[in-house]
Length: 209
Length: 209
Image 1 (tube, rainbow over the protein chains, first blue to last red):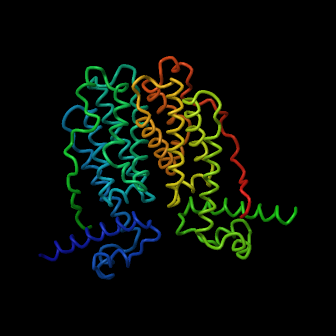
Image 2 (cartoon, one colour):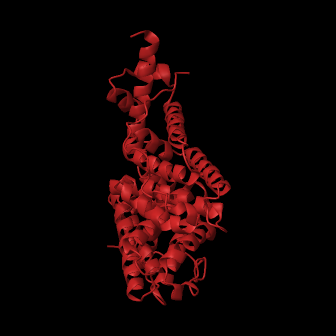
Image 3 (tube, rainbow over the protein chains, first blue to last red):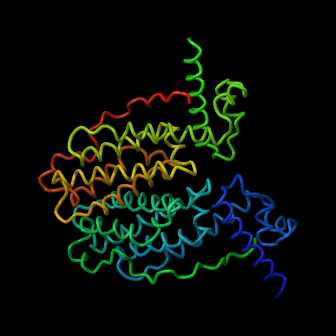
C-alpha cells in the first residue's frame, strides 16, 4: 500500500471511531486517546490528521453531510416517491451508520438538519410542479411534518431501534399521503418505499486535506 | 421560614439548577460544584440532599415525570381534543421548562417517553370508544405519528426554538385530523389547541425524601 493510501485509510478509520464514540458517549466525554486506541492508531498519528477534537468533530460532520447527499441524490422517478424513498433510506442509515447519527447529534448538527429540510422542501416543490400534490395542499405544511417525523424517529431510535425499522415511517406515510397526494398519483405511491433495503454503508471517500 | 420549608426550597432550587445545566451542557459535563454555585448553595448543603450526580439526575427525571402528568392530566372534553391540547401543552413546556427538557434528554429519558406514548395510546383508544375516529383508522398508526412528531419537535427545538412555537404542531394536526377524525367530529376540533397558552411553569412541589 502506498503511503498516501495508508494515510487516507487511517484518517477514515479515525473518523469512524470518533463517530462511534461521539454517538455513544457524547462529544465532551469521548477522548482523543480512546478514539485512537480503538483503531490501534498512535496518538502521534491522530495528531498528524487532526489537531484537536473539534477538528475531528468537524470531519465527522462533513462526512455525515456527504452521506446525506448520497441519500438525497437518488432522484429517479416521481418527486413524491423520491421523497418517500429518501426518508426510508435516511432512517435505515440512522440505524446502522454511526457517522450519520453522530453528525446529527453534534452541536453543529443544525447544519445537517437545514440541509435535509432544504432538500425536502425542494423535492416537494418539484412534486407540486409535477401536479403530484392534491389541490390546495401546502408544501410548507408537508415539509414541517416530514422534517419533524424524521427528527423524531432519529431521537426515539437512539433509545429503541424499533423506531428505525420500516414500520413506523411506513405508518406515517400511509396517514399523510391520502391527503397530500393528488388522487391520480396516489395508487402508484409506495408508502413503504421502493429502494432496495440495507445497502451497505457508504465508504468514507473524502480525501485528507 | 421554618427549617423544613427552607430545605424543600433549597432542594427544589438544586433540581432546577441541575436541569438547566444538564440541558445546556449534558449530564457528563455539568459538575456538582457548578450546580450548587449557580444557586449560591454550599457543597455541603448539596450533599445533604443528593449523595451524587446520579441521584440529582434521578430527582430531575422524577420531577419531569410529575410535570408531564400535569400536562396529561387535563382531561376535560372529547378525547381527541384532549390529545391535541396536551401535545400543544407539552411542546410549549419544552420551550420554557428546563426540567422537562432535561428529563427527556437524560439517558433514562426513555421512561418519560414510554409514559407519554402510553398516555397517547390510552387517549386515542378513548377517542375510538367515543366514535371520534374515522372508520377503519388504526390507533397504533396515529400513536406512531403523534409520538414521532412530538419527539421531533423536541429535538429540532433544541437548535431552533421556532419548532416549539404553535405553528409547526398546528400544521401537523391540520394534516392528520381530516383523515383521522370522524366527519361528525372534525368541525369541532381545533388543530391549534384550546388551552390557555403560556401558563407559568409548574412549581416544583415534590417533598424531600
